[in-house]
Length: 272
Ligand SMILES: Nc1ncnc2c1ncn2[C@@H]1O[C@H](COP(=O)(O)OP(=O)(O)OP(=O)(O)O)[C@@H](O)[C@H]1O
Ligand SMILES: [Mg+2]
Image (cartoon, rainbow, N blue to C red; front, side, top):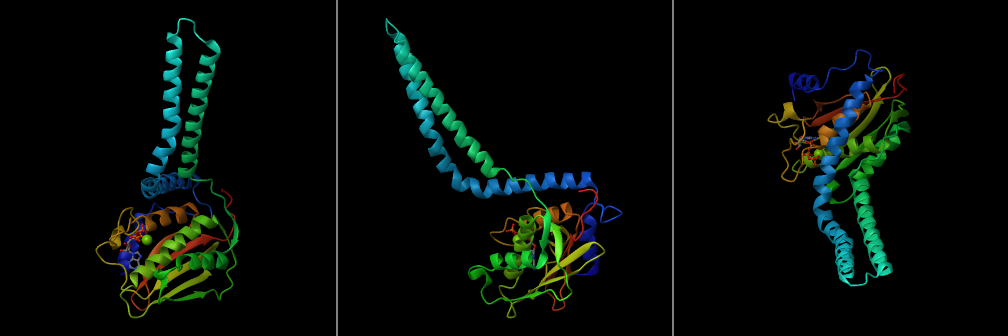
């Protein structure tokens, strides 16, 4: 990718606050809300297919029980002498089953809902290495040489570990995917100091680089060149990184592959 394209990618993101260590809280809130919406969308798409039939089955049981108890109650009402105790019991059982259906729905809502985010001081090397181990599980990482580099003393960053690992996981998997047809499969993950108050992570691969067709929309949702790709990885990553007050962009690696850079805060901003 050329320097021009890179600049364009950066310019597509909202204007950064003038002091990068003091992120605009409303912009952050907005980005977090967008992030939640996007993640919910993705979880829904991927999880609903599997869950729909199990859920239908789960809900069907209390619903048919309710129908039976109510039909029974109706019959009891037709009797010349209404058996009040029996009727009461049937109605209570119907109510119980309705509560059971409610519990099933609540559990589903919890499953789909996104938990609260928590930012802590985390060891960046550990965060990166764990994400790397996860990303390279299975055949997807076969034949790929991975190097972790942290020789400039970067230690702690203030991040939501799970979210940043989600970002790194996507960057590493993207790198591995990009090198599928490359004879040389080198992936390096470098941790180094960034601008004041920030650390920088660079995930660089030896693949063909980002296709010029999509370079300007790289961080937009649903942009993908992969047959089975949703194209949400980089869009979610940008939202997560910017919500942390950092930036994410792509450059061309020395060998022509893609080098994704991201910055993460090392200090506690005053307005968190
Ligand atoms: N390291 C890379 N080298 C070359 N192209 C890349 C690289 N990383 C991303 N891309 C391009 O950017 C597109 C978008 O990436 P993104 O991670 O957002 O979505 P995806 O990987 O296609 O799908 P998913 O939603 O599963 O992540 C990819 O389809 C690919 O074309
Ligand atoms: Mg991806």
